[in-house]
Image (cartoon, rainbow, N blue to C red; front, side):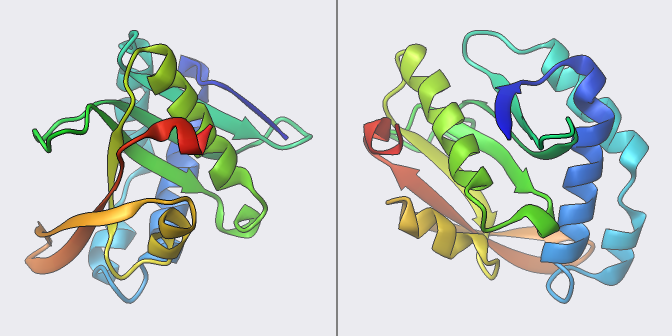
Length: 172
């Protein structure tokens, strides 16, 4: 396995990981109709736009397996909601269900933390589904839950939790 910066031609594979992971990880939490309506094409377009616009403050990384198949990704950049004192934010981090619990998530968090550190950012935050299994993962990495807030997804109120690291050097 290897971590590398994402390229625009990775957008379709990133979209597949994203949609498939939402459908498996959030089944029973987010409505079936919402999950069924997720579009690979729309997500691909979105990820391609993000990858093409990355700069010193934003990034996209993928993890490939030994055959070159993308099995995980992370994207991030400047913190978007003004949650002081956190300067960086991981916007998304997903690993294919069949590849989880093999260190891939840790590889991606480390890549994100390294990018932030090189950009002069020493703290970060991320949002995750409060009922999701990823909360335990972020806690094992030293993240502390600092906030919760509801998001409306297809008329359902779904709680999300923010995890933060005051000093990302612990992730390096």
